[in-house]
Image (cartoon, rainbow, N blue to C red; front, side):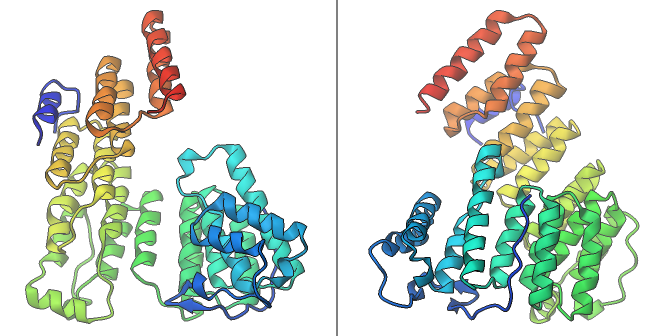
Length: 411
């Protein structure tokens, strides 16, 4: 750990240890490679016009604004009919949300309008959606929390296609994102009825759903059942608490090989992230420690940024400053660079729970100087609000001026 970080730890600066879907009919066959659109094989009914070239270039560059401008130009020139299904679908899937926190309501509304326009164009030209298009739309509406649109999309999809596992997983994920974890069980029953087998992603989402519902024992049981070793399948006892999970995790090299060779999925960092989240929601820090220090090493899963952010999040929420400090130290030792999410958890602990705005501001400056991370707007707003509340107007004005200067000159 760097001397700067050690110093900040010792001084307490870093805590010590809805839009509606359009109904489409039968899908068309797309040119794909391993389930992914190959933009090099996009075809038109005749040689692409000069206006169509920018659309292809924008699609290949993942340039949303460029895709929109090119698509509108084609529409204005009445040339959309010349595009094959692959062009329309690729244009549709270009409109996505990369980081929801960075999008305002107007930007989300704009993306919804653009998706609706492409969908309407496809319908008028009898160009049909396939399962990847539906999965993309479910992902979009899930991220913005529009459960009604997700349900309508699923109804449309089910009436036209046999949903693939990819679509089922997208729908399950959307239910989680829309804070509808109870809906997952009906989706799983539908998967079973249609003969679509779950995979590791499905189980990860089920663990997360059980955690959000407060069913910690059930979340643990899903893990053991889904990722159990086939050599001893059916022999593991029911899980009564987190400490008993270790029984199913004493994997010898022979057992690991047997599991790898079977069809039983292997847990990933996403699996353990869901499990950590389930225990964190119930305040079971002992369970989180067991997952991090015992279970993950036994399965040979190395923590990544998401795991460390999950650990720090729950340690900070439950005010275990020492555990948060240790997780941060482990993170740096593993050469994993913290991001804004990491620091935001620690910042909120210091500013809101510990009521130490000066310490929180020092952390914010450390984040800028050492990791070149610009503070979130919410960090400045929080500190300014705290100073106003305590009538420290000079401090509030100083921070406001700093914030205004930062916004005018981001560099």
